Length: 292
Image (cartoon, rainbow, N blue to C red; front, side, top):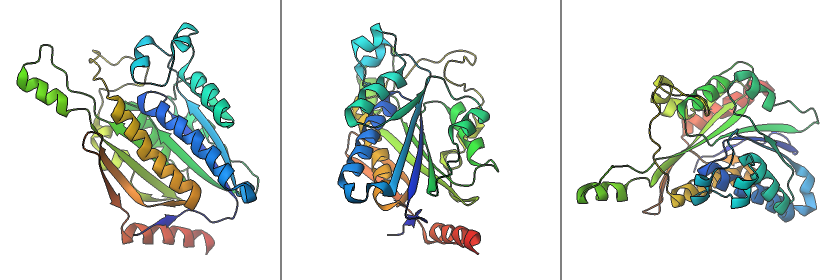
């Protein structure tokens, strides 16, 4: 199996920025903080080898409808909490991880750049953008950030699942369609290293994302509002597990093993697209270009 190891320094600073705190995002964020806590406990003898700077951003407030498939409570609704506040307080406290939160939607390139400072502590910085969004406009912004000249290194993990097909008054055949829908999804890992694009991000794997001009940021209308396609809780949970697996590999081996991971929560299937020799060679050339 081909792998890409990002480690170039004994001491690593993981700069993790999660955008989105909904169905996939809440489960992933809980997993993420548990993974950070577990890493520190398992590696207590050399726990200073890695620092974890975790931030979650989303402008959504917890609503009653979120309780059916997201990690929130009635108290969160009553107190009108922002999702990121509820998640960061609850799981940051439980796992003893200091999790920063931004209670706004990320809608500008300048804001994205400000979320990724450049700590000068002698450690190698591995910046990670975790996209837990359900709209193409945010992905278009992330694409602009990924390909900007100011960004030299970035791991962009994007998670997406399909919603359930809906019919107003479904007949027997349409019910079969409904029952078979809403189970699939994919995790796409984009990588830019020392200025070179090594693994294409989700916007280049699925170029129709960039072509979608009928999309808007959360909280912004864009013409006629389309009805929501509900998400299955099992699809949310499996999606979060897949992205968590990518993060766990980064923490413990500092490595990437696949560029795309497709999954189906109904059938228990997972199909990774493993790295190619060309991608690994491109990565090694990017490393040599800096050290030469």
